[in-house]
Length: 187
Image (tube, rainbow, N blue to C red; front, side, top):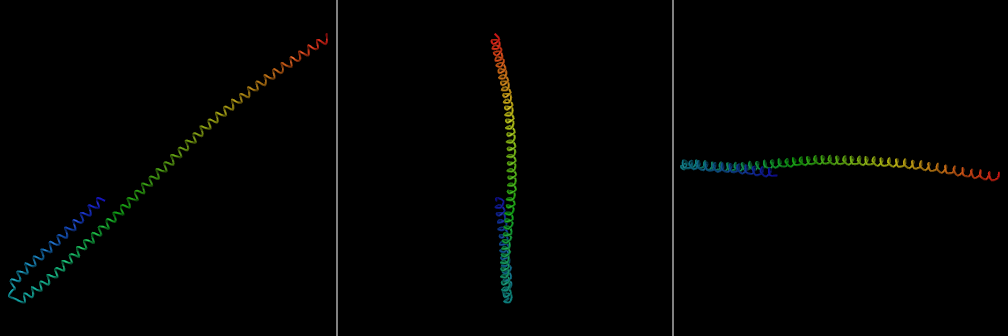
């Protein structure tokens, strides 16, 4: 924006200088014509026809004034060139649009960052899966616990065998009792 303001100021200064030059040249032309006409009138005072010619010269001077007006039209052309400069400024706005497109590109880059964030979330998900594997390890330890339970069952089997041994001892005692009764009967 500061560059645009500086360009506007420099262009306005250029136009004002050109206008001042044109006005200064017009004033010089008027003065030179008046001085020439004054000399001619001094020489041609005796001649009415010459004074008529001087009147014709005045008319020519009026035409020159209209030429100055034409130069004013040229000044308006300069103003038109200013409008063209403003068109260039509009093109600067188009450039700013291209800057906007750059911003849009940066938005795309932001979306890339977002994609990387999603990848990070995927990594986090894989980490969760790793934790799931760890959970499965815990389950494996549970299976080991079940093995311990199996060993407990084996212990119960031992206990059962102990019970069976005690049963056999009971039967042995019963057999001895029966033998005792046989001895008494024989007596």
